[in-house]
Structures are given as structure tokens and as C-alpha cells.
Image 1: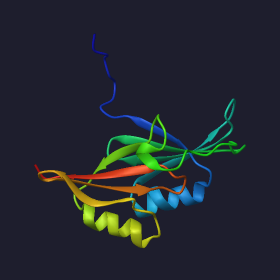
Image 2 (image 1 turned 90 degrees about the vertical axis):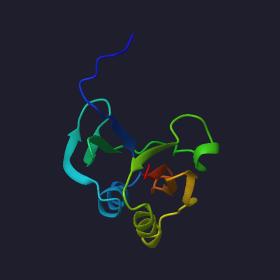
Image 3 (image 1 turned 30 degrees about the vertical axis):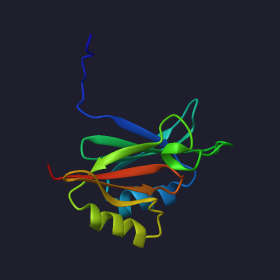
Length: 137
């Protein structure tokens, strides 16, 4: 049985260790649109920095009490669970170069994975991998 969706995209929550560094990456380098900063009272006190990536909402969550554990480093092969998410772009070469020039690690440089489809992988300030995908099919 298919579920009935009320939105054609997902919201992604990323708990960050340094909100300023995360905003510099997602807002300033990748170019996500900043929507709002929302206080988070209650069970998980902190601040949610809300950014739009197309129709998807990216929630950068800066908790008042920093978690003891950080994301397992090493990308796709290092651990199970959520390891990366994909952003479809029109200029993968330019955006990958922009990330590299801003000092972010690029463990997978622009490469064709099938005819007319290219990817790259960038590491955010918390060690999460972000896949850029350019589809010219």
C-alpha cells in the first residue's frame, strides 16, 4: 500500500557541532536559501537553522548540549546508516571547485558514473558526505 504524501520532498535534519561552520558550508558555499532560525525548547534545546534546497528543507540543528559522539568519518564505506544525500545541480564542475577552493574535502572528484551522469562528493564540516549530481540525460 502506497502512502499518501503531503509534500513532494523531504526535510533533512543534520545535528551540527558548529552552527557557523555548517551555515558557511550549506548557505554560503552551496547556496541554500536561509529561511529562519528557530529556537528549539523542550527535550532537545538548541537552535534550528532552516535552509531550503529546492523544495527540500535542510534543518541544521545546533543543540545547547553538544552530543558526545560525532558522525563516523569515512563516508559511504565507513559505517551503516545515513551516509550521504544527493543534490542535483547544473554545474557540477563549478560547484565542486567552489567547495574545494573554500577548503572542503572532495573525496570523490567529478566523475561520470554512467553516460551523461556525473557525481562528486564533498565533506561538510561535521564529516557528512554530500553528493553533487549532474544529469544530462
